[in-house]
View 1 (cartoon, rainbow, N blue to C red):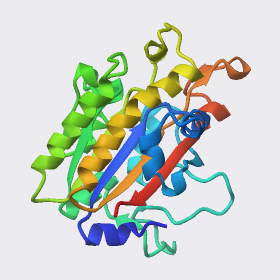
View 2 (view 1 turned 45 degrees about the vertical axis):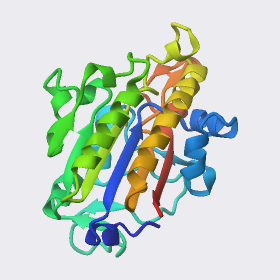
View 3 (view 1 turned 180 degrees about the vertical axis):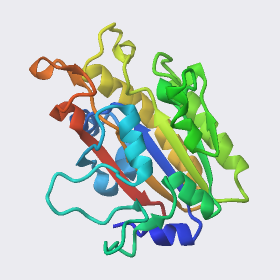
Length: 264
């Protein structure tokens, strides 16, 4: 259990990465196949936890995350939550949980002096539509460009460059840095030279993103301690039981990878 309350009291910066649409089975297989060596070197125990997402597509999943509902373990008894909105009376909250008296963890962190920054990926962060402004509006500042999106084969490099630039400029306040990695979201067939998205092309997309995620983590943690949280917002069906896509209550969509740790 990470003592997130102490993290906030000590003004430790936080990196929260969502690997959009990444299935747990794909993440696990890529790890075991040696396709993600940078992630293997930093994940606690060198493995992903298998968890269940609270949302089956990007918008509800992130609304839940920012409200305090991160993916849960597939078991009846859950560990204490990392953060939670101030609960009703009579509910007991673990002392290691960061409790915020605000409508979102972002607003709660701002009350504690944090600068909250979003590096968008998929179009729910693009401000191209009113709905695409809901999530960005929750942050102090947000960044999105077309090259951050999944049709761009080198999207993660562009996103990580932006994130590292922001971190270098944030020396006076603790930072809540959120990155929505779009490479693992469709389309990703281009990573294997195919026009069809598949289990294999998502694994290839994750393998591509791995080096840049390693660069991001090394660039941040080489200078100070960070709390790092990485997970998928949901998975994606590629024809299993006849299902395709997301927004459906299917195991390929509900089962996501998760990890959280404090850097040394």
